[in-house]
Length: 259
Ligand SMILES: Nc1ncnc2c1ncn2[C@@H]1O[C@H](COP(=O)(O)OP(=O)(O)O)[C@@H](O)[C@H]1O
Ligand SMILES: [Mg+2]
Image 1 (cartoon, rainbow, N blue to C red):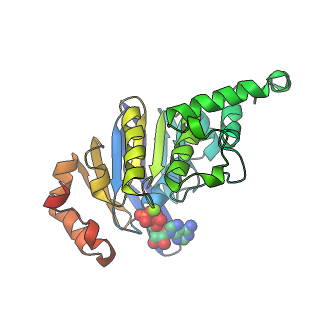
Image 2 (cartoon, protein in one colour; image 1 turned 60 degrees about the vertical axis):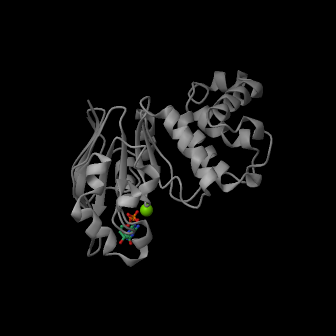
Image 3 (cartoon, rainbow, N blue to C red; image 1 turned 135 degrees about the vertical axis):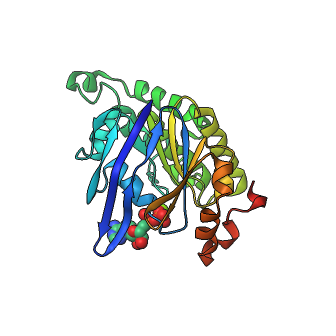
């Protein structure tokens, strides 16, 4: 069953068409990779899906409902949660404290003044530590967020997203800026979610996700130019052309060595 469908989704910035007539389908519980050179429209597409941008044209249907005009918060309530290309965490809080807004917002504490007044801090802290356990950060619960490594901040960001119990988790370049060891940790976490949560993952470096995703979509100049099984997509001459055509991604271009 399709969890998310877009129809003719288009976003213009002045004369530039950043996302151009995109018809995307994400099936329930699949892991879909979205790749493409820099500036090909991947992040803009996620901004349209998650409600951070209104489309110039087209629509977004999530869980059978037209959500094109819904706010990001309303989409989160429906189970669509995204992370950002640049790590965004609360450096001045302890690790467990930084999860509190997500825990509170996602529980009945947020909706009931009585519950809010009577809920013990310990209960919120316990829930927060449970969420940290999921991403392997339990031991850092009382550390300052600022002291975490960049890779652990990524894991914390994913913990924020998971605290909302997403049906669809959208990850924008979750490996960017991470060391190989840190990438391994994030990938292990994503593998543990695979098949239970629907995942849309943007990645610039194809080799990072080729073994993880069920399906790949390739964007170039705002359009999906190719989609299908990862190995088939990587063998497509169009995909090679769009990567090799851009000097800055030559090293990351798909090639037989990436397979
Ligand atoms: N808020 C914005 N205002 C104007 N142009 C933008 C904005 N966001 C993205 N763009 C442009 O849209 C195009 C696609 O950008 P983006 O979606 O960030 O690409 P990618 O994530 O694939 O690198 C780029 O040309 C970029 O400069
Ligand atoms: Mg981007």
